[in-house]
Image 1 (tube, rainbow, N blue to C red):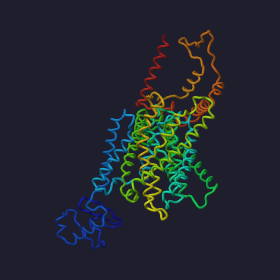
Image 2 (cartoon, rainbow, N blue to C red; image 1 turned 90 degrees about the vertical axis):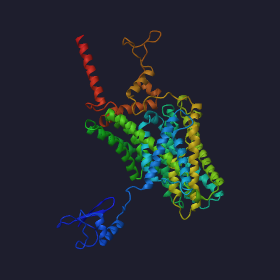
Image 3 (tube, rainbow, N blue to C red; image 1 turned 30 degrees about the vertical axis):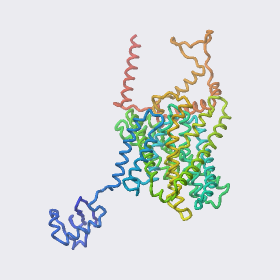
Image 4 (cartoon, helix red, strand yellow; image 1 turned 180 degrees about the vertical axis):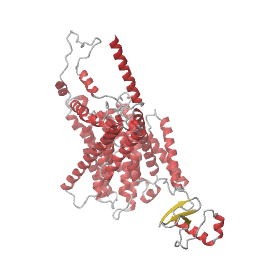
Length: 617
């Protein structure tokens, strides 16, 4: 027998049937022969007159999950209402503070979250400040992916890959140096301050937790149009740094501290290289697959909604596949965004390009603001503060030690690596000046939601060896470091950049929509001395009447061996092999009736008209 149920606001009627009988309405009590029949027209007052039927209904209601209650939890509705209201307020305040160089939306959201947490504390009589409990799943699965993907989608690819070596040195080697120094410093200092229950694994975890920079806040305080070099290096390092920190953190969790040696270090290095390259390849593969599908199946001729939805879903799918395969979802979705902006974005219709560009940016903006609101409100977790049982002096002291280790750990690799790299640069224009080194050190001191999420993962569930008091103190100290670094360093970074560096003029379009291709290389050849044509089509001449000689390609590549050669070879490979298969700029499909199609129609008509005029003349 199969049983199906329908629920109404007040009464619950079960429908059941068998193969040999017609459907009937009855209460699901007793056998088929003695069930209490309820006729469809029988009203509630009539049922109340029959004690047996009334008892049956009450028993049925007690057995069902929804008893005279709403399908939604009231507390969840209230929490979401508060957060959406705060998001709207953040957007309004951010608009009003747009020209203020001391404030940005991340700091505004953080402070607004703190104020909201204080209000909740006052309303509840200092019993609880929780509207939403900090969840690692919410952060890593829903909020972080759109931020990292949009950063890869909007990043200036030429600038990013030009500084790729520096990014890898800072993001991998620098993070390992910072991890070692912070772990060692925490081990030496905390034991002197009475942290006797923290284990070696806890100290190693502290090193991984506080080595993670806040790439989300970097997006708020740096501008890739005004400071392209700093943005590409600091943000690119932040993405690789987050992935490296998470890999180190996961390695610490599975590490046998009783048997550590050279083989353990080699195993960690091998695991990291495996995760880095496989995560990157997965992101590239997901981006290329989306480009190939959209170019081949040609969605734009029927529905632009489908191609937009496919881009969004495949971007998110790349992150989830990486997490499912125990890879780095951050690296995967970042490189997926880069590949999609290079190929997939040019395969969709003009309207879909505008839609996806603004949709990705909007989702990223909302997620960023939500994270900082989330962190601000969670900072006043009264239960953790009570469980730490620490005086204000102790909390400030522990937080100061941790932040001091962060300062030293970052300085220990930024300045040495930058100066070592300068030793291999022959041209002055390619060297990293000290003021740039200082800003790179400064902007990377901010800690954010990744640090808090890893701290909760390590210390929220108290083990037998670690006391509840020490674990709670570590969480509250982490929150203090995040708040202080974000508010203080986040607010000072913009004025510091303005004082030390002359920003570039803002570009009107982002890298996802600009149009340079092999044209860039042609301009570079012209700048190196290729003759330009005058108004009459003849080559220009020097002052002495001699024509300007065009240098050979070999001479140009010898003059610009690194950037020019790599860019030139990549462009030739891309145009010959990649774009014919995966599409991209110059391989946009013609869609009748679309904005791009209309432009192509007008261009064709103009060409025909020009040819006809020339022919008749």
